[in-house]
Image (tube, rainbow, N blue to C red; front, side, top):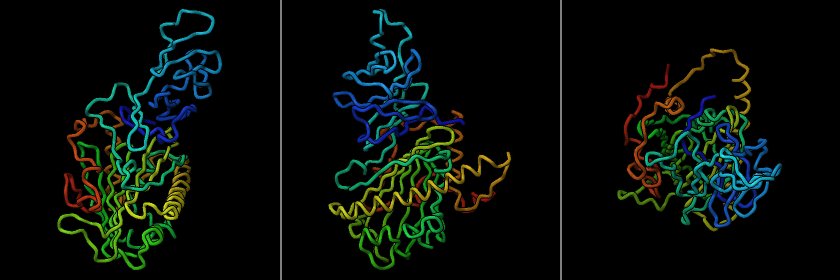
Length: 380
């Protein structure tokens, strides 16, 4: 399996990285995560150089990891600082240290053969750490290749058929999409605007809306690892004002961090941030449980799909239609990232991130941006 290296991936939520050693495998590389006594997140290769014992099964001594097999000791930068039975430390006694950044409630790690630079900004999901938004979140392991999850998230028409009783309505499958592709930034945007739709239980019970709704779904996928669904819900006819003010609508930011573990396993980090009912614990519990139900429905479907793909004959040809436009664009970007031929992203701060372009006005401008694909672009 070829991965997109020289990229940032979510290794854990910040809340899960502490003074207990945490094992994660990312892009096939075993890592151990922990937090120093001063609070910095550390990511090291999870193998002692001596006899390959997992450092995640070892112990901390201050900020150093002491291997639980023979006592080789490593400081947070990966250098060995103590060897049992001798004073001289072999020149090659060190383990790899991975750059780690804690941002927007996630701990991101850089998996690559070079150091990250200005053209490698950490993707943003600022709502997850914004006190004006209330967030519920979780992580589910997926026994399927990460590309299947990307396909799944970029084609929301499956909500109508797979997520009965949660987020499904007929209008999601029936409404045409608009797709934009920003090749330079490696971003795919898929927008679906429903003017008059049924209100699914996910929103009816959390917002209190009893009638039909205006429902906007504006997806922004930053390859290879971050997906954001900007969701706007309001009673039919309630639209943003001329100045963009949108206080009469309800806004939800659904975030998925997609982290390949191995060629056929994935970590799916999910979060739901809202700008309403922020002090209502019943709403928080409901949204957490409902979204986890939705995620597990996807997990079950994609696990089954992985089994089918793994057993099918070589050369099988699938059929693509208009709703697959965004997913096919993402596949092309991922292919270039994996092959190392993708264009460099703009330096940090020079591009417009979702955190700047989307606030309470409720989502992306579906007609803006470069590379709008024609309606039939997905049809072979």
